[in-house]
Image (cartoon, rainbow, N blue to C red; front, side, top):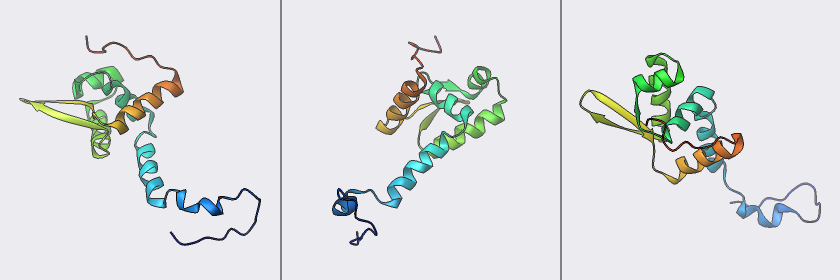
Length: 123
């Protein structure tokens, strides 16, 4: 990183620690993740899939949405690597990705909204 001189000296300046500030690319990645979850339906689908593995039809029923609408949201979440899918015959099942990123987002959602995890939604 280039040496940056700040225009105003306020004493305990960040100027001495500019090399510690993450780059624009780091924040772009985070912004992309927040964009994925910026839709309340997608956020709710992600939360559901953190607790169970389900097919589009069952997710549609839980969400009270059409299957095509749910499929669109699933496609976006999968492209963002927040969920994964597996095929069993003709049926495709979705669940939250088993990544630290997905786990942290799940925790953040529950802490910010004070939602309690159920034991299992699908049982």
